[in-house]
Length: 318
Ligand code: NDP
Image (cartoon, helix red, strand yellow):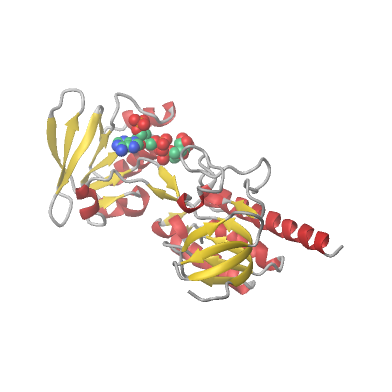
């Protein structure tokens, strides 16, 4: 580890739409943003295909290409984008705060913008990990295409699962929906949609015992948690849609969050409970979770950071 920590005015942690939009605004405000791109540079959009609901792209755009554009725009305006993971923060006392990157590089940050996003949750069974990318996926929109005309299963009973089941039903011959309780969590409209789709079969009170197959998905063993009966179903694709987990673990000692780890920001602001630390994007939004809303809150975070620094400098110069 180097002896003198590097000083950074505006440190942005995460590189999805929120992080890069924060960077664009911060660079233009001349607070010299440095973005740490994290484990999945570009964020969740890099694992999607067509983005059709981001304004300004009348023909739609591919997710990875859109995130390349975000990065280029941020860099052109003066952002430094680095590949690395922020692994530890110390938000005790007043800024600048000590931040560690990849467990070796130490930074002193005047302001920190958290834009670490969220990741899909997994069931946590061994066969799921073994067959990940070999028929197991957490994104129907990204991977559904590979199962055209085939039989697939999807786990979950929320709006995402229903939306993805409907999407898959248009591409695949048959979709089995594995629902752990006797009812859905999804909104009534979404429930009706799946219930009225002829090639979706809903398996209530059902849990995934094991995904079958050695090198690729060949089936699933489903257990009825009321009767205890198990059943093997031949499928080629297995989708998991059981919600998302915000990537906020490293901040939890300092930052106020809800019980599921979403950061709580102050009303009409991106401010957290810690002075000089702001949050934006899916790390603090469990309701909308859209690229465009993430970008909007990224803008808010940069404006808040800039105003905070200006006020601090003005106070310091008196
Ligand atoms: P949710 O948290 O709403 O639902 C997760 C689902 O996964 C629940 O049905 C839950 O079951 C199930 N689940 C969780 N863990 C397991 C497990 N280990 N095994 C089996 N099943 C499991 O997540 P969503 O991603 O669906 O939605 C998140 C938010 O986004 C919601 O507020 C939703 O309304 C919103 N959304 C809205 C959309 C729209 O309006 N078009 C589209 C997509 C999302 P159980 O019910 O038993 O707890």
